[in-house]
Length: 467
Image (cartoon, rainbow, N blue to C red; front, top):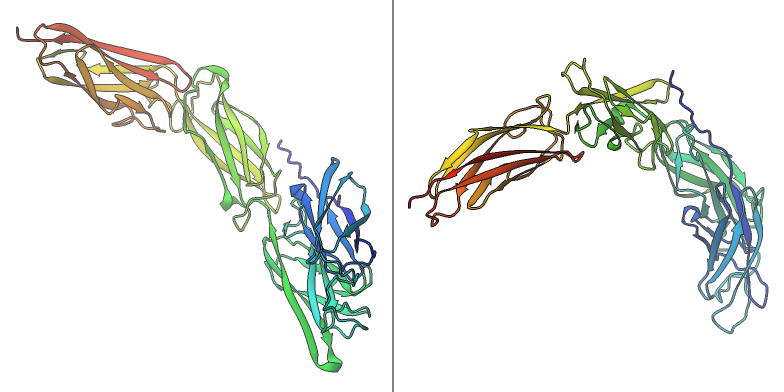
C-alpha cells in the first residue's frame, strides 16, 4: 500500500506595523516607502498612508527571525530599524523617525513644500500601495494561496480622501480556475486606515497570471475611476502525467552482483503542473525498483520541481526483464489533481565492474618502422558494454606507439554491444626505425570501471629489425 501525505496550508502570518514620523515635530509622514530588507524570504514593500501608518502581513516560519526595515522618502535621510520577530507574535508598535535633509522644519504631512492643503475633495485617483505576494500557489497544493492588496484613494490634488468611498474589484484576466476576490467591494476606512481599502485574491485550481482591476463609480458626475496594476502569478499546480518524467544519471550502471552502499546512481523525477511550471515544493514522489537494485523509497520535490533518490548496488543479478539479464525498471509515482496515481518508468542496465578483454591477433611481429592493427572487444561479464564513464587506455612498451579509438577513452552510456560500444581497433607502430637490434615488445589495455575495478590485458610480440 502506498501512502501519500499532502501538507495542508495554514495561515501562520503575523503583522509588522507601525508609524513613520518626522524627527523633531512628530508629524506623520505620508507616502514614505517601507521595505523589509532582511531576511530575503520576507522582502516586500509598503507605503505609509496620510497618518504615517504602514502594515505588512508576513510569514516568519517556525523560528525567530532578525528583521531589518528600511524607511525612505525624498527630502529625508533613510532610516533602518532592526528587531526580532517570533512566530505567531505581531510587531505592531514600531515608530520610525525620519530626519529632514534641509532645515525648513515645516513638518508637513508629507514633507513636501508643494503639498496642497485644505479639505480633501472627491475621489479622483486609485493607487496600489501594497501587495503582500506577487506569486501564490494553486489551491489545495499546500502552498500559500492568498495575496492581499491595498489601494489608496486620493482627490485630484493628491490628498487622501477621508470620506467613505466604495471600491469594486474584479478579475479582468486570469486562468479561469475558480480564483476569486474577497471582498469584491470594500469601503475606505472600514477595516483599514482612512482613505485605503484592502482585499484578497484566493487562488483557484489552475495556474496562470491574474490581473485585478479596482473601480470607483461616480454616477452623479458620470465618472468611472479605474486602476489595474495588480498582476499576481498563480503557480505550483498539481502534477500532470505529460509533465512528469523520470531518468537516471546514467542508464548503464556497474552495480551487477556487487554490494556497495556507497556506490550509487541518482534517479531524478521532474514534476510539472498543467502549464509546465514546477509543482509545489515538498510534493511527494514514490520510487520503486523491479527485477533488482535497491532504491530509496521516496523523496519530495525541491523549489524547481525535482525529486531525487539513489539506486544502490545491493548485490542484485537481475533476470526476467524483457530486454535480458541485467536490466531493471525504476518507476516513479505521484498523485494528480483528481487523486489518481500517475507513473513514469525508466529502464537501466546493471553491468559488472570487471571487464572481458579479447584481442585479435593475440601477438605481433612488427617489422622495422611498420605497424599492426588489432581488433579489440571490451565488454562486461554478461556481454554488454561496460558502464558509462568507464576509462579505457592503451600503453606501449619501449619503442612502440599506439593509436586508435581506445588509446584514451571515456566510454559513453550504452546498452547495445557493437562497434564503438564493445568493438574497437588499436594500431601499434614501431616508433624507432633507426634501431638496428630486434627486440621484444608489448602493449597493455587497461579498463577501469566507475566502481574502481581495473581489468588489464597485455599483448606481447617482437620488433623485427634489419642488422
